[in-house]
Length: 101
Image (cartoon, rainbow, N blue to C red; front, top):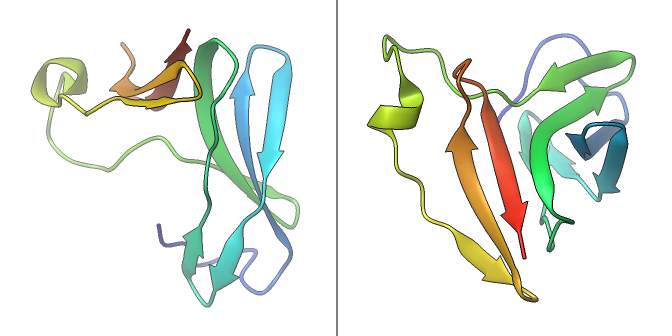
């Protein structure tokens, strides 16, 4: 992914959030580009975000004119350690990962 603007040059953290659970993952960052590897997640619907200094940046998807992304985008699932990770858009068009075992 790419990030720019506030928080540039500050420590960055990547996390997945589901309800009151938050898991952090290593984040490699070079200039405005970032990369992380998400292993198997516990069951649930997980929102993703990057924290840049004091700013929380949710990874919600891209801006476009698609009204219902759930119907327009079918994203492939991956199975890791017996857990299926299904990228998906939710009813409010935000991006999440559904983890099921």
